[in-house]
Image (cartoon, rainbow, N blue to C red):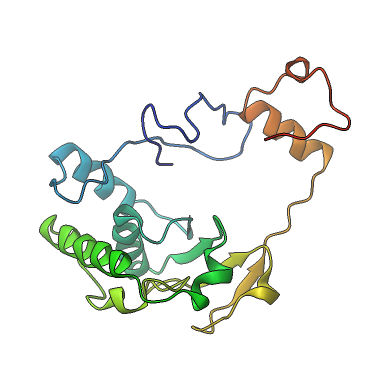
Length: 190
């Protein structure tokens, strides 16, 4: 799991001890103007050496995800892209984005400079589309019927079941305390 230290998303301590998974945290910079350190490369190489059946990720335009996809795909690992926002449903309506192109080109150059393979130097051409990275095997979406499946990838529906066990697990992970909210009925959170 990748998290920014002192970031504004998921910056609290999380408790994954109740989950049946091993969770490893590591912080690798995303600055495309700096080379990876030897320690960062060692952490990436350690991940690439794991014997995995599946790799699930959420951010296509993340250089670390691209490095892991390229390396794990060569080992026959199933690569799954999970929805993290609304891009799947609006990407086909977006116009040309010079910023996306430039970022994708810089990302590929950065990956190459750090001595990792780039499997698609022309990925910038489709970078505005959802699921554009080569190597993705399946997409997981909340509204698959609203997605334009331009790559004809298999789609699985994300439909969490809010069972008591699931909610208890979330409470443990996020250290939820019911006393934090005095009012629970007829309340709007913003």
